[in-house]
Length: 74
Image 1: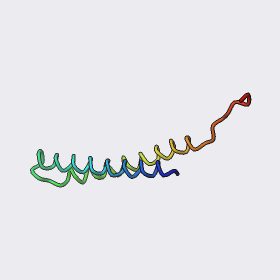
Image 2 (image 1 turned 90 degrees about the vertical axis):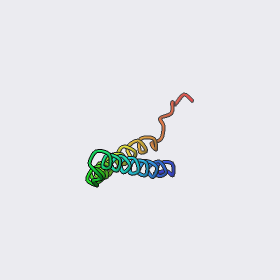
Image 3 (image 1 turned 30 degrees about the vertical axis):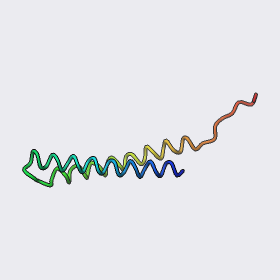
């Protein structure tokens, strides 16, 4: 795995956790009278998104790491 892939995974994880956490916090305060349950639900959803995203990122990274087929005429 390349450094770019690892940096992207770190950014993806941080952005997803922050976004889902902020969304859950806002929903809890605005619509559920300060309840933390929407935050917990959103964080569980964030874990699922990150888990799925790592598989997709690794699959895309593995396909780009393969050597390119070059034409024999070159």
